[in-house]
Length: 184
Image (tube, rainbow, N blue to C red):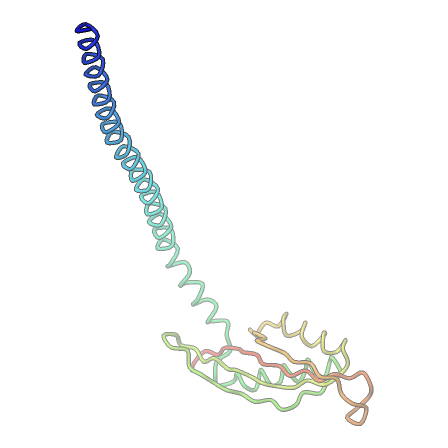
């Protein structure tokens, strides 16, 4: 019986040592694998961030290189604009000519000038109503689009006219648009 007790104690001790070794291995495995994966994730995130910063720097450098050319083009564009002194009469004449050629009536023209800060320009907001048939209005807008002068149509609202205000099928279009003048 003494032999069995000793064997039992040896087996229990061996099992205890194995359990202790297994616990130590689990502990070291978790220590080795967890920070390594976190380090790898951190390294991957930092590498990605570095690539994004390098791409941003490259884009900024390209933009910086093109700034003189862009400023030159702005100056060229501004040189094509009408001078403020004669701009109003040219714009009014052009709108009247386009309306006459398109068989339209232009009315309620209002001008709202505003200086453009940092540039030698005046922005002119215009509100006008144009009355006529659909084809004439389309022709008028096409002529505005193809004009040598700059017109930006911000909005237009279309109303059909009752027969008492003119021929059936006529439309009234309220335009809100902008153009620019060089300051004198």
